[in-house]
Image (cartoon, rainbow, N blue to C red; front, side):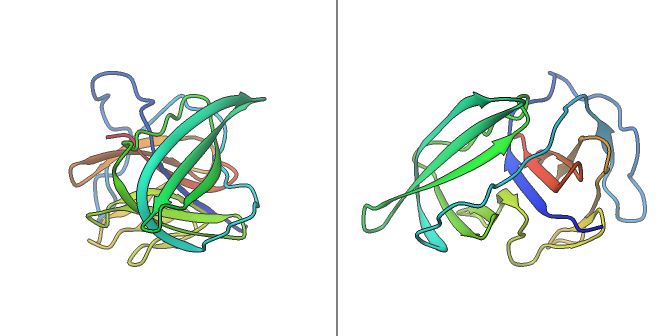
Length: 177
């Protein structure tokens, strides 16, 4: 089966940390299953600049059937705006700060976004340098292994950041804090 990778930061978990339901050994980070339903995609679209570093100037959404369509707008050093549409489950809400600097790499239905500290912010069908995937296991640059599920979203921590992720339709990881 072919998988694509999606990573996005979001705020969609209940307050407090539920007890882990799996992982936590052999390099696999502990995770908790969530009630998030749906998949995340970066639909094929025109990408005028395949790689751009700039400031986030806008992030808006609108309901579109069974998902939310988010529009992320980045302004590059030449003051040109670059827009990227991402589809997410309704409970996944990106938390990128307006004015923050990010690097976007996008092409042919694939996108990855990292922050100024090279922390993963968003990826769909592509991983930034240093990240790898085999089946539903994602390997981070620091050696952690994230075991995703093909049937449900999971929440987990990597370092000081919290994420949700799944391999529902496409492989997905979403930063929540």
